[in-house]
Length: 199
Image (cartoon, rainbow, N blue to C red):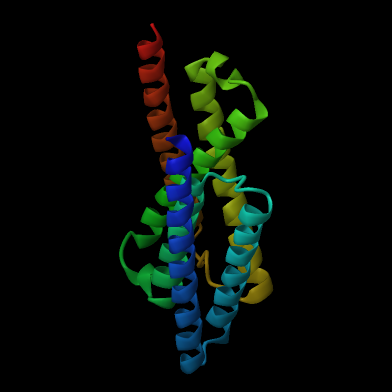
């Protein structure tokens, strides 16, 4: 049953990947017609990242769970295709939504990393308080790294990710923290249910 579910998840991942890639290509062509070379460059970088992710998945036997990879591709679609190409960032709180979304999948990533570091079910021995602290701290650290990358992109490639208002950076980090906290809460609820069922 698990292998069938896994094959279905991989099939969904491939459909999502191709859909996002086609959308990115369409957005790059549209930016070309608008003469916007900066957004074309951003789109091209994103296409390369997507190709690298797909090669890693195929070459190493899907090290990232297919569900997680699909979530990442959806995030890329919303942030680049809708946000950058479609002008979504002009919509009130669209950026906040993206940072909460990123916090959720980064929190999920932290859980995947922890489980793989602690092989043979070692994560089940950890107290819930430690797992919550770990996931929330991981999400906050990732949000800080993302803001550093945005800053570097603005300075090196003349992107406009951060704007001029320092409040924007702090709000983005808070939204990422909120997303990570949501994932931590969800994971702890699933753990508690599993622990109850074992008793």
